[in-house]
Image (cartoon, rainbow, N blue to C red; front, side, top):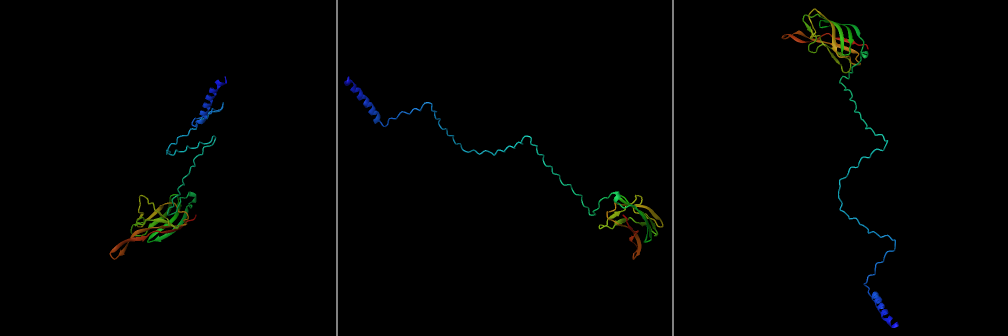
Length: 228
């Protein structure tokens, strides 16, 4: 029985020697221990080339709840300042105008007799009550060329022109007659005026080298103080 066992042992030894002497033989993969998790392969993302995208507008932030909505600030345009006139005259109320003035002013100029008795100051006019007598031998026309007007004593020497009646625009006075009435001058009295001058002129004839010549003669003039 010992002789029969020798060949089998020899065969086993040959097989083992062959296993040791084969360096190229790959060892079997070690089996993982039981209940160990299977590792998952690492996935590397593919790198894509950069793409230029337009800048997106950031959305407006929504207001927090219960926050009052701010109201836009309303700006007011400045009010235009009133235009300053060369006369610097502002319309005054009736209470700021001088009261009615009464006078007994008398003058004689170039054979014209004048008498001024009253002045009334209105919102848009100055009314002068006076009488003018023509002692000349020709018709006198006081509202021709420069006309008849009032002038105050302010720094601007405001002029108030006559508003003549429609039936006698030239203020014509026949020889030997008297023109009496109310003469209306346009405009309210300027603030600060304390004196008025009534001035007039008229065409008159005089003897010259070539006979009678027409020139301007001084008419009725009054210096009128004003009590405020």
